[in-house]
Picture 1 (cartoon, one colour):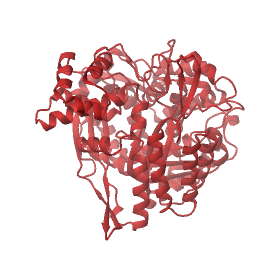
Picture 2 (cartoon, helix red, strand yellow; picture 1 turned 120 degrees about the vertical axis):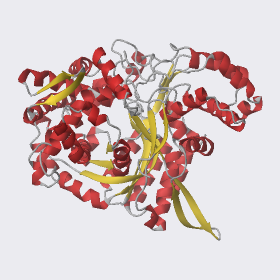
Picture 3 (tube, rainbow, N blue to C red; picture 1 turned 180 degrees about the vertical axis):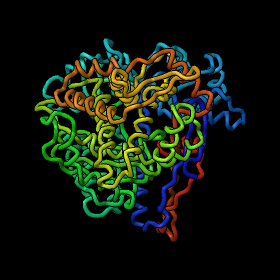
Picture 4 (cartoon, rainbow, N blue to C red; picture 1 turned 45 degrees about the vertical axis):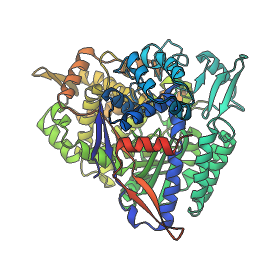
Length: 638
């Protein structure tokens, strides 16, 4: 069941994950998970609305068309492909490239589809007439230049005006930066939309009860308050603080919640819920809504404790300048968890590791919490075992054997070091924040955490504390990281396109920066064999030294808020691809018939009642991708 491919379309495969041990949990814990899961699902439309000015109305119209064609048993394959794509991306833009999805149908076909559906359907579901829908959708669907990019990061352009993400309305980049150029008192850069009114006034629409997204947040708060009834100890206070924040919209209340949340480490059930990550904002200010509900895997987490308990040792031995090391590491913890429900920006595509909170001052004073999503990682691994990507792109049989032996362990170790120590390491100069790096902040921060993991996973400390049997674990990951960053990940990018997504920019940036120096020393090279290119490492210890050297510079850039250095590093190494190599990689990958992107359907949770009382919560895994998306649109629409 875990790793089962539920659906496959375009460049995407949808997988299933299981929640081990759920059936044996006591009712109180099941009910807590159920209530938190309902809260996770009610934020769906918020994320859709954030993901482009037109995304939510496009989904609702397309679902009307699709359901009508299903009823007539005559679904057009072009409509089916498009609706599956936008469901997966939570909007009309590709979740990695940020480009607007092209449509395979023309305007006349779309008009015919709309006119076939009874007019009252659109009036009841969308509040628009058929004529209004057709006129509104003409530029949205059929003008490739209209709001063509969800997030534009191209240097020299107005990143706000040219990005369709729905954090800003009728304002320019200069106007937004002026708004936040003062001390920020009374402003909500993380959880508000900036809008220019008809009178020319620039205002913030805060996301809270009584503010923007009121209807959805009311539902989220309802289920959080139901969760309080089933929670224990400090977790009740954690939930109360989150509810307070949703009511006030005040980021000071969000800070109080994060401090309490990061200090609450012993609960077997945990959750993420809120406006958190800023990757979708070209300015790195506004946060998308997301949620993960999770059960701690206590057995697997015990090994990670070996890493977190040695956090001070790692910080003291970091290759970065001593003035940017934390003199005292506080509150570092990490758990291996099994995801129970994914929501918002974590669904259907989800991370395999998370480190929060993002505020550096909270990390420095109170610490951070990290999670590694075991059942999600396992599903990815099971689905990829027979894909053939390793055999196609690995440089040697020795590399393949080492990856097959240690690949899962090395991936897990990298995630643990990246999330648990990497993001929580280092300190900033007085008055400096990650916002000083603007559009390059997310890429620099991900590079910093990746480099921290790459450097330390090859340290003798790994064997000393018992988390890796030998350095071959690190060498397997070095092979995979360079192979992925220089070759394989280009399969995800359309030919002729730049790299847009922060994690992908980060990986290429690290690989190209270190490879440039490794080729000079002979430590590594890209070579050609039988018309195909491969990456070969000759001196793994030298590669480790280069990772450490780059980490030192990346930490300096973040700590000092050196925007020009961040811009130069990202633009030089992280954005452009070699056109010929890009074409080759895409052709090789296409020959394998493997989808480069994966996402998930959630399990379905249902209450069991007897004589009006709840006696159990059951979890099922038989819902299809289409069934789940249509059910969510019906049951969690606001």
